[in-house]
Length: 551
Image (tube, rainbow, N blue to C red; front, side):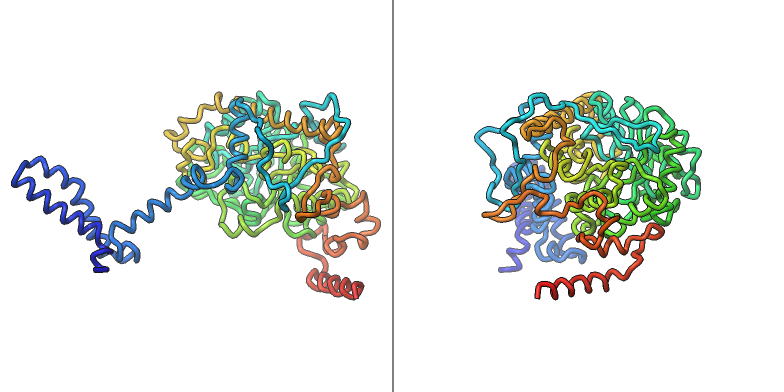
């Protein structure tokens, strides 16, 4: 009986086929049409029963395939039917709906009060003022460029984060750049090169160079200064950026498979077509923090004096401190640093790296802020935050804890049509955003979706201005850690400067031993990314001494 039940689907199809044959003989041959349905089920049942690859279909022919069907449908059923407004990952419905509403010009107001648990440990709020500002800056901008820069750039407080042509479709890149042009913000190319689609609409560009030096490399994969200068000197390129790591997969590098390396992508990246395109784990152009600063200065000179920056996901703290020590040693200061959060991004990555490698944005941003402020160099280096920003509050939060501006990737993808199908790495994106299939790209019209990207930017910055005004401030640069409150228990809430350490100006130079970073600062070496001290012993000793003091 158990055997019959396990094989019930093909057996039922066999019985129905025999019945159809009888009906065809006794009544009408038209009954044979049903065999087009029943016989394939019988054949599939025989295949499943005798195949050796899958245990469940061998034991439950045909019926087990329904399990596969529901596995495929599971993400969609959860997203559209099961999950609550605040439950979805990586972005809940509330976040996606907010971006879509603002991009389309629909109402973004919410009735009947917050749906968040205000007593929950994840709840945060902004301390407002009884005397709100009457005239907040509705287009707040940040000047990027220290005294070593000949061509400073005025950046919006919200910009498009790094996304490469190749990872994104041509139409998606066009739409984002259209939005940047008409919305007055910049568009980071990602490490995939400065493509014709970045150039078509003339939006401000930050050209990112990763370890593959795509678009500025020789045949051996080394940095080519003449190619770089040719592209970086274009008026559309406002700043350049050295990518050290990205939040989705820090320390991993990347690979664009041969199937995606079309002739067009190959020409943009200066690599052979139809061959795997590798981004190495690390850079060839420099091996130490001091050499990195020298390379940054070279890029700035080759670009005609435009701002140059670094982009990284923070990992081992002594390396962040090594960067500022290298600035002090060489006297070379990059114009900006973008901190990418380990919350991930548009790049597909091994699950373990996405889930467990690198610092989340808040932690990384505070470490980098403390490195710059504590070493007394924050006045020379702007700081940007990139990681899961989609709302005015997200902008306000990051600016309050040290960022000068924010970049967003996935939020801008939502604005041009992304529905979080999470098929970015498969080339089957249903909205044409992350695919090179021209038939899928057809659904994305750059001018239409570009206008939505610009509208999302404008309305989100307006929301930031409203928050700024409510705090009694005119420009979001005036936001400070004490304006943000984190609940840390049902009965306790603290301003963020009482939750995380915020170093005073120059303390790492004058009295590093008084800070929580003493051992990391001592280990930082401007001439090596490796620690100059035994961190294991130092940390153990520090832990032991703290216990003695408590005793």
